[in-house]
Length: 472
Image (tube, rainbow, N blue to C red; front, side, top):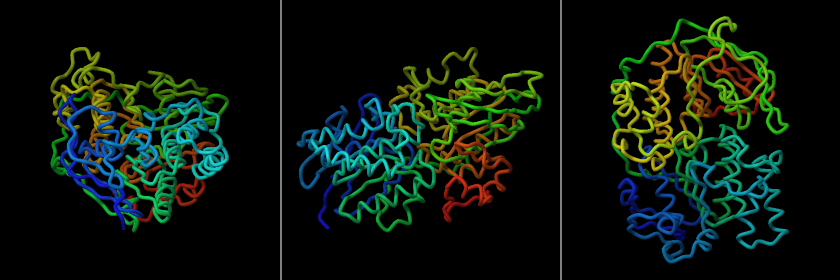
């Protein structure tokens, strides 16, 4: 097969932090897929920027080596021609949302390629059908859930039909059913003559595919998580045992009912996972619990007799919206009166942030930014616990293991830990699991029981792949 994309000993160093991508070479043939694996922070996103030509055209730094597309150097090709040949989906889909509506977002790329109106209409309807975006046609992209935004970003690039697709963690925000469907769609594109590069931490969706060969990007050696000391220095215990009660919770946005009459109760000192398909209302539920979302119904502690409103700290799905200080150190210590510096030092080590202490937060990788958001959240005490929205995003297995141990320590201290996730193997580590749909709670109970409640998963159309292991 002819080579369509070739990276020859390429490397890149960002001037802001003197980090980036170590020298690496890769070739991609026609009708081929390459699955790129690597530690969080190993340079996967930087690699995709090099392969697509964004580096060196749009990013300034020290670039060496050469990237060739059909023998033409990306340095010599204008951006409009690169956009015609290569389609790149960013790791954070919010970074490439430009248009006022979902329909306009997809049409934007097609219009810039000069495609005929009839062809644009056909491609638009086909992509709407595949990604099930029709209900969102006239919605602003920024009102969508993280998973829905990721589907839109994928749809916008797939509609352009470039010869080479480059995806930076395209499965990170997708539920298991949508992830399997997307992988099958890319495999079909490869069968039709396209080529694809996928950077991904959810390896198992790709490891058994005959369409992708694995390429390991060199990274930093990491000790096994179980060998690290995760004893928390002087982390205060929660108040006496309590119960969080949610009664008839309803949320409506722009005339759309996101949550309908949801009721449940949760005891302190446990880890709770919330799972559901994209758009089921998981993020909206957490925002309601922390007091950021207008809602109807009651959210209280102990029947409202004492401490009526819960006091949680929250780690958002998109860390960019809670990071704004000039350095990692400033971010973690921001507005912490009389900070416990022993805890600060421990968080740097525990979350692998020590080498970034003086780095501007927005220069970190997406996985590193999420760990930073967790660090600043744990630096401040939430009286009742912590809420985490998709904490596994951008994390390699090592850092997911660390996360699991951290959450267990918090629950053992008496806090209530609630997280949303599409990573069912992460959910398996929770004590309690709530399975939700746009119509409400489908299953609620001990994690092992809910994970094996076949009818509940079938009811919402969420696949549990055979290779996933739930016995922990």
